[in-house]
Length: 135
Image 1: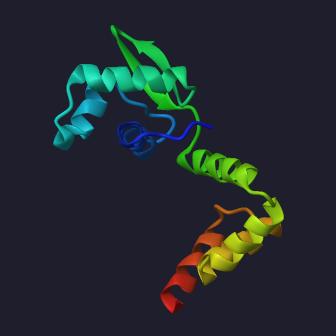
Image 2: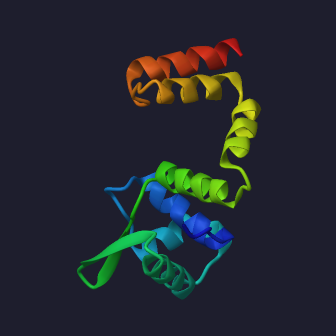
Image 3: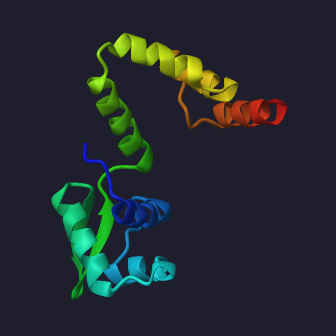
């Protein structure tokens, strides 16, 4: 999985925030990043490179392209975490160190995932929110 540069990450954040179904044109992404004062062509180049890396998918919409994330933000981060584990001398030791470094709420989420509980159910969301209020 390719790590993203600062500008690539900003562009992907715009797309991820819109959701995988909505997507955005170059102009819409440039508008969302207007505080960075980027040229339209710069945004177009970044999106083209992200398409080449397989990070975004694009389809014609009139004369413009509409770009959508190829995977969710969470799937991308999970892939980065797995890639980082591949760099460890011992995956087990790295996993143990990681598990010991998470907060109580994060540990609950990991336990639920290992137990096979769905992570997007209202009960899981309510449990996480309750734990955060207590913590």
